[in-house]
Image (tube, rainbow, N blue to C red):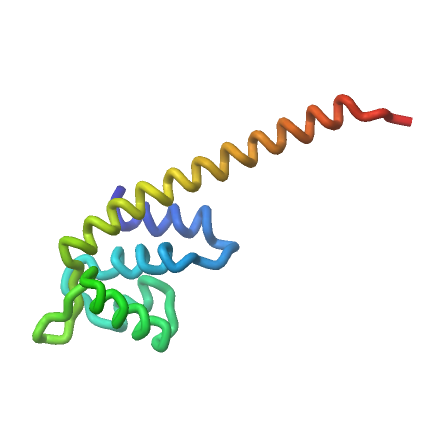
Length: 118
């Protein structure tokens, strides 16, 4: 899945809900593909400057990104691994939610079929 389709998927399925911490980190790591400046990362991940700085400091501390001498950020191998695992998890989570919604719709239809109508 390329970066553009990842952002499209996120917009399509998650546009009307708050992002989890994991989703925010995945968005940040997707934005920090190669040497990226804070402004680019902020716009790509759709975060305020204050929130961006909190997350960048966290990601630096846990080793998912690194900061170059020129002040740009780049994803580490550990960050790349996290992003790959996270994408797989988010896709599975989406499929489970979709399946659950289908099951609940079927349940509703079955309950409607066995209800008494006056």
